[in-house]
Image 1: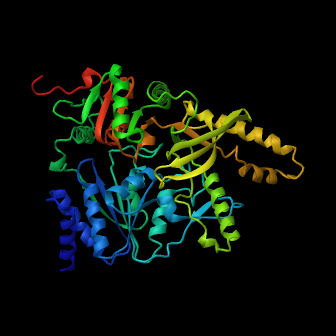
Image 2 (image 1 turned 90 degrees about the vertical axis):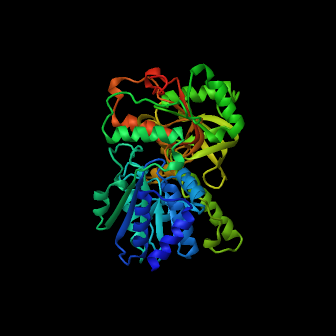
Image 3 (image 1 turned 90 degrees about the horizontal axis):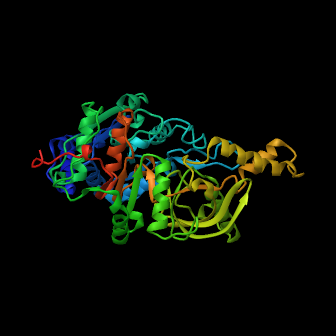
Length: 501
C-alpha cells in the first residue's frame, strides 16, 4: 500500500503519461526508496530526450512532500547549477559535499569527510564525467579517486543511499574508454546491490525536436557500431537545427548575443587551437575588445586552483575572530576551490605585469555557477592563447624553477622544505590559469547547457572516425536547449529529406 501511494505521488508530480521504460523505472524507484537494504545503489542511465530529468524532478518533488531529505550533487559547478534548475532544489558539487579542508601544512588540502547524516537519499547527475584516477585531482582531494570517495562517503552514513544518473553516449572522463560510474560491474565491486535501468525510448513530446532527433540517431549509430562513415544530420523539418555557412557566422552570433546574451551562447570545437581562432575573432569582430583582457570578458578556468579560496577562507576566519565570533560563524564560501571548467566573468582588470618569464594581472572575477560570487585573484594570462589546455609541464617547471631562484636568496628560508612551503603559498605560482570562454572544447562544455550552441567539427578524415568522435558530436548537440548551428557543415553529412531523395 505504501508502495502504491509513493508511486501515485511520483506520477502526479511527473504530470505526463509515462513511457513503458519510465513506468518500469518508477516502479523500481519506489521499491528502492522503501527497501530496508542499505547496501543498494540505483543506476539510472538515460539518453537525451528519454525524460530522465523530468522523472528525477518528480522524484525530488515527491521527497519534499514526504519530508524525506535528499541531497543533489554533480561533478562540476555548472552541472550542479543545471541540475538545481531542472530539479527546483539546491544542488552542490560532489567535492563540496564529501570533502573537508585540512590545515594548509598538510600534504593533502582536503580529506574525505565523515557522513554523519542518516537516511539521506543522495542523487548524483552527470555521472559520466566522474573519473576514478588520481590524475584529475592530483591527490589534493581524499584518495584522488572521486568515485571511490563518493561511494565511501555516502554509504558511510547510516541508512544513506545513492542514485547515480548519466548518459553513456556522452564523452567519458579524459583518458577513459567508458565512464566507470555508469558501469554496473564497477559499482558492484564496492559490495553494493546494483539496481540498473536504462531509458532508451524518446518521449513523444520530444519527437519534433531536431536536437533530440539527431542525437537519438547518433546514439543508434553508436549502439549498432556503425561508426566507420561520417554521420549525417537532418535539418529539414526542424526549426531548432541549422546548417550555417561560414559567411553568416558573425551575423548569427551577434543575433544570439543580442537576443539571449553572451552567457547563453557557446561555440564548441574539436581543439583548443580552433577555439583560440574563434575566441579571437569573436572578441575582435563582434565584441570589439582591443585589450587582452577587459571588463565583461567571459573566461573559463583551465586548471583546478585551491589557493585563492583558501586565502579568502582564512581572511573570513580572521575577520570573524576580530569581531569576537566563533570560527563556525565565519562567512562561508559557496565553493571550496576554483575548478577546471568553471566559468568566470571579468569585473575589473588591473596591474598587468611580467615576472618569472610570464604575464600576470590582478582581476576581480564573478563566478555565475557559484551564486555569482566575486573574488580578487591573480591570473596568468599566457594560457589565454595557448594551444595546450593549460600550462604545459615544461612551462610549469619553468615557473617553478624561476620562483624557487628568488627564494634561494632569502636568508629566512634555510632549508629546501622551507622554500617549498613558501612556494606553495606564492600568489604567482598559484595564479589562476584561464582561457576565453566564447568558444571551448567539448570536454569543457560537458555538464553545461546553453540556449544556442554552434558546433564546428573542423576538417574530418577517415582516420578520425572513431566512437569518440560520435560521442563528441552527440555531447556537443545535447548541450543546446533551444538551437544548434552546424558551422560549415558538409553537404555529404546532410541527410536529405524525403522530397529530395
